[in-house]
Length: 71
Image 1 (cartoon, rainbow, N blue to C red):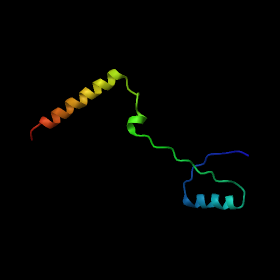
Image 2: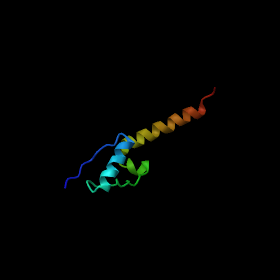
Image 3: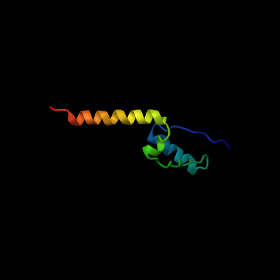
Image 4: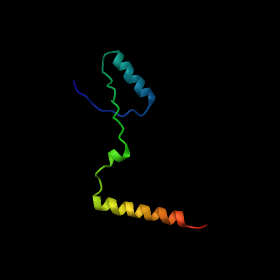
């Protein structure tokens, strides 16, 4: 038995797969859902501490400029 990964481009194709499963020709394996990570967990450690500090300083400066601007 061989396992293959397919992409379904049409809802009719999925119905055909279900019909083939009922005939015991193949078995549709359900894709397990991955636990979604928070953005902070997903990107933790991706920047060096120096770069992260520089970026944080830039963001803080930008916020100050935005808050201090007059229209």
